Image 1 (cartoon, rainbow, N blue to C red):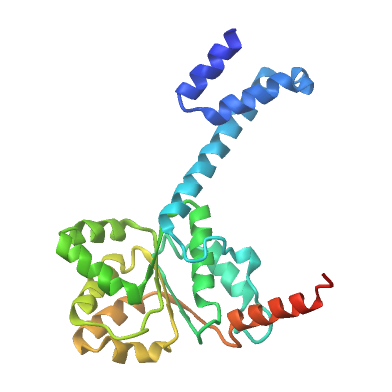
Image 2 (image 1 turned 90 degrees about the vertical axis):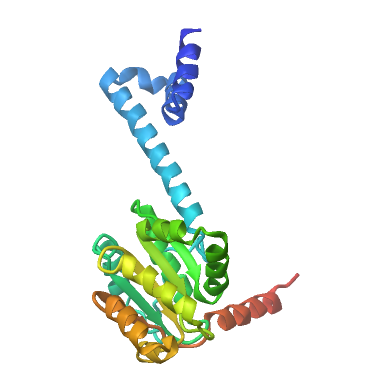
Length: 255
């Protein structure tokens, strides 16, 4: 009865990981040969790992990544894609997030830009950083709604505190003056302090023309270019290749 009371108290104190580990120890005969200090260390280690797992799940849920399962360990760096695996890994393992660097990923449609951006953000979450995914073509309408409902300033403050912001499909479609000004606010809040990942089919040298207003474009690009890492992806569309491979597998299926 005493142990059941202890387990209940542990869960009441939100120490579920420790409680589960204690239950396991009670039915493992080998544990009796271990010292109290060793068993306690294992219990505390389980609780720490459990909390870290829950924290990671919250970060990934809040990030709303387009490719939630993307991870740099599965990066396809085969010849023709324009990706240097060592450069990507060096970036991911480095201090680009804490240093507030920008990552600029360009290339044709289907080259894997969004996947790479999500993989970098996912790894940042695994290191304890917060991330948010935003698709720029949809951002215009979202910004109008936030302005209309009076929550834009609050949202902007929340975004400014986010460690990694993905701006996906930058330069796709037109951009109005309000969105252009809002983008400047977003980028300015993050300049040199928070990390930003931008993906675009447009080469970087065409971004100024896409932004339109010369003064705002200068201001945005000046902040983006302060500290940046560039990846230019090449090759055929990964989506088309996956569809071709899927059709081949079906044709080879004897059933």
